[in-house]
Length: 144
Length: 144
Image (cartoon, rainbow over all chains, first blue to last red; front, side):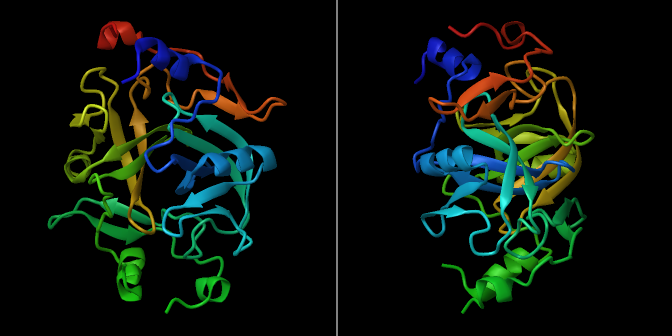
């Protein structure tokens, strides 16, 4: 447990003290710097966070591939960081970015291309942005 | 591991199939529906997600208190959901909300009231929004 003084340091201090989870990660939300649209939610480990700050381009840590990756290293769809923010308890980061092309691996501008609506038989999804800005099969190769 | 057909269903289908983590949670990002500002990042379990869809107000699951909570139930700072989006792999939710007062428990409008900048001796934080819209001690009581 954290003491009241420690919590105050984390919440009110000006020292970067990321609170990584058991897997060594913090959550990162990337939004379009001009429209405010949420492009993606991903994770950063300490190295990804350092590289992002140092380079001004977004780096993440992939949980599924268990590896550091620079956003756009395969697809070319890089994110230039306009501003980085830290949240109150320092376990979540918000980056406002200039996104080249599409943020989503499906080729859509944003990963959030479906809306959730309440329905009689339960919540359903509907597509709000079907446009693919690139062809995932061409960029990443076919999944077997 | 998921098969290619299962991944396609999750990414391209219109069925709500949230991919809860080992703790039964998905990440939820709340943004201000009018400004696009990220207000907070929190988590929802299945019940919080259902209650949010059904009520049109944001419910979350607190990992620190290990309990369901309606945003604003103590502080009065409720979030009316204008739109809910699901991401490609269905493990993150984005809600655009009308926020009453402040989203952050520190009294600030947003939890992201500090900016991260690269410095010579490493990254540092600076406060971009110091204004408290309520007094946390008065709302939540003093922390001992």
